Image (tube, rainbow, N blue to C red; front, side, top):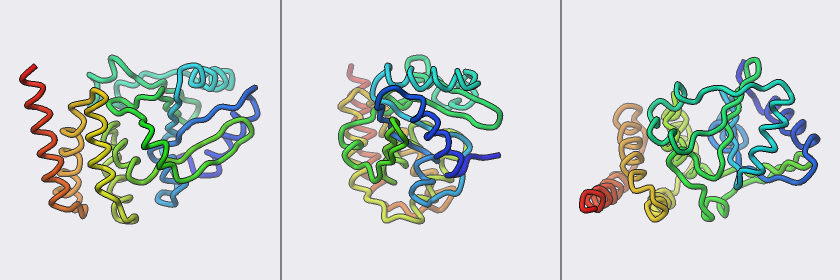
Length: 223
């Protein structure tokens, strides 16, 4: 059984009651899409924390509640090189899976701009859950590249007035943080979305991302 908004909120309420102090986290992926009304249920719950201490505290509570740690390799198979350095903590119990990230989501940094674009804040006792914008969900769908991520991105493009300037600007921001390969991933992700799933992505967006990608690859080759 997939996770709907009721089950997700129930889990957050349990975590909020167990916490001894206030902790903030960001909900991304399908979990965020549920709050945006773009999806009725998700296969897993994705949470991002700003530090290891907060992440560990939630992990400890979940493990005490019967969740078991699982390997990430089969889920993030297209990002195995990045998993060597920054694998999320993946926990499962029965039919529920939770992926917990610490600041970095595979090949993508949670930046201050993303934090400023948060659309909603939900309070569950001592757990404060922030919902990222549709634009940032698309960016992170590219970063994770799991099964179903393209279909979710298409749903967002079809149902929201996506600000493509935000996506291009954030892609450039990631290169400044050391993720020079991200624009390449993003270009390929969006190109396949348009060609295979007929997503309405403007030509100038793809052209701009291709230009950024070529520039970043050229810099990398010169090093």
